Length: 238
Image 1 (cartoon, rainbow, N blue to C red):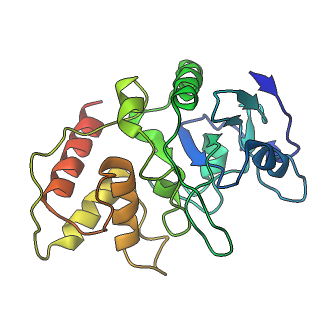
Image 2: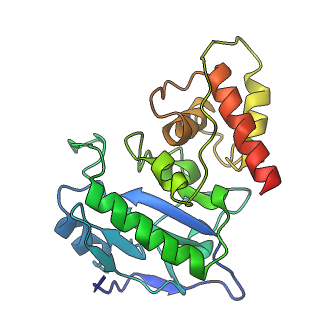
């Protein structure tokens, strides 16, 4: 691991215990460009770690400090995600966005292996529940879609990091009853109250990016319901 200190951090709230692990992609053309931005005092953004596509790991902010990676975000009613989390940036150009042509692509083996090793170390140091290993899009669905549908959440969960549901056998549309599905998403941790300026479908899509990446249409179907039921059962029993 290489040290690449960022000036962009402050103290965590007094008495706070780290309970979230938030994964991002950089959304920039190169790792060097991302490092420079994360260490630019004027940018006011940072993360605790950055992992290059070739597996090199950079330490930017001490884990005991609050890095500025999640922005306006929420989970389970908590709005200061930065204060309670560790943030990891994965070098990847990301999706297209206004004024930027992304080259979103799968995350290489070396990068995933390094991430698993880093996360295992973090989980030995902090009491982070499996359902608190999240993507930026989970905690900020109005603004973000990273690390996105090409990120291998299943592999991470199989390595003991995070949660992966039992695979549903079939998908079949169900008309209506979206409200109850949204209520159950809220039970899992997704926040609707803080996102009244856009349709709940965006939160459904964030859920699908994480747990049903082959179909991120935002449509609610039997497969989505089965996945969410499984996640809620895991959460209740863990």
